[in-house]
Length: 188
Image 1 (cartoon, rainbow, N blue to C red):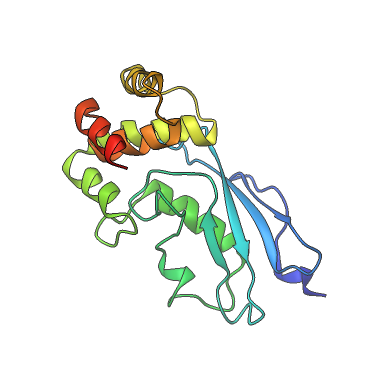
Image 2: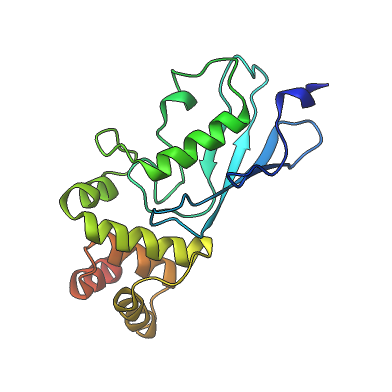
C-alpha cells in the first residue's frame, strides 16, 4: 500500500491533498495564501502527478489556480522550485512540497524566474507587483477585494467586449496602462 507516502489531511498551515484517482498517480493539492502576502485569503489549487519512480523522483506539480508570481508561470502554472527539480530527496513528502510552495509564495526568487514579465515588475515596481498579485488572488483564488482602481480598468475594457481573463493578463503585463493594454488586446 502506497498510502503511507502521502500525508493526506488538513494541516494547520492550511494545506491539503485529495486523491483524484484510485492508483495514487494524480492528486489535487490546495494551499492557502500565506499571511502578510498579496495571496493572503486566497485558496490555490495544485495539480500533483506522482511518477512511478516516486519517492526517488519528485512529483510533478503545477498551479491550476492562476497566480501572479515571479517563480510561477502566469500562463501554465508551471513552478520554478529547486526541490521539484534537482534538489529533491526521497525523504521529502508531499507535505514538504506544499509547505515549500507556500514559503515560495511568501518569498519570491526574482533572479530565478519562471515568468520574466512578472519578475521584471517585481523588481522594477514592487508596489504595482503587490497590487497586481492581490488582484489576481481576488479574481482567481477568492481572496478579499483588492485595488478599486485596477478593478475599474478591468471593467472598462470588459465593457468594450474583451474577455475578462485576457483583459487581466493584458493590463497586468502592460503596467495597468489602459491604452497599451487595449492595443495588445486588439492585436491578439
